[in-house]
Length: 323
Ligand SMILES: C=CC1=C(C)c2cc3[nH]c(cc4nc(cc5[nH]c(cc1n2)c(C)c5CCC(=O)O)C(CCC(=O)O)=C4C)c(C)c3C=C
Ligand SMILES: [Fe+2]
Ligand SMILES: [Fe+2]
Image (cartoon, rainbow, N blue to C red; front, side, top):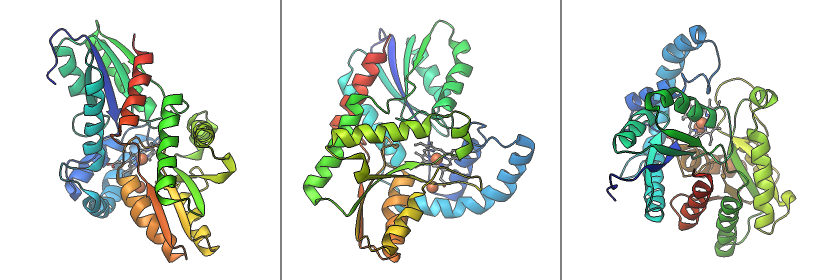
């Protein structure tokens, strides 16, 4: 897999980033960088910095580290292990392109990865943030970093793929994943599409994220042979006290459990690969909350991860965008 010196094109996959280890200090380092990004938390720095460093992080890091520990894989955090596996699958399919993975926050960051690729001779970068739906909180932060770095590599070109929430290849891959689950396990009483939430105020200011979640859900439903009404779209992983997009995943599950719903299928099409927010929050904590409320079983349908269908879809998306 060593690149030939002559390879000038790179496909750079970018994911969020994740702690290096499942301990409080590693989680603190990661969250301190992530949550200081003004795209993620827009509170003025002179208020947010002391609040984050003196109040939030000291309280949050140990319990969050325990959550990471409960899902940790042999090679590290699932987000890292699965993103790397996906990158390797894509690399196998693109022999004429240098394929690499970088993280927006934490280790293996965009700065070092882009500098390394540039030193290897790459002059045309296709940047694919692993966020199917565009958001100012995620995709725009990757764009910010590219715009900040680009002047350092003045003879290189950067092309950023803004989103792929309605790309037919990705839509079909998610629909097939859903149908395969239904074929193997039958259909539950309810089907939930759970997306990571964002503050509602951002959507009012024009963030297209909620529109992308809704439009993608419609397309996936159609491709899977379902009606849109067969699916309940919810938002998970609320952070902080501001109003976030609703309905909330966890509240909906509690209501369903209390109302006598016995089984639920949950899929999370906003996450390219499984991570803390799917494996711990949905498949573990929220499944338990659903049962406590009266439900019998929550079936978590995994992300596309390093499946052939996912790699094929992202290769097609990248090829169409390449200069
Ligand atoms: C998939 C898209 C994501 C959006 C949109 C998003 C917005 C967003 N997130 C936070 C705060 C946190 N997110 C955390 C974890 C996390 N978030 C995403 C993705 C999106 N976030 C992923 C893939 C992960 C998992 C990372 C992993 O290592 O597995 C966390 C960390 C965990 C915790 O402390 O609870 C925080 C914090 C905000 C504030 C936000 C939008 C404003
Ligand atoms: Fe998040
Ligand atoms: Fe969370």
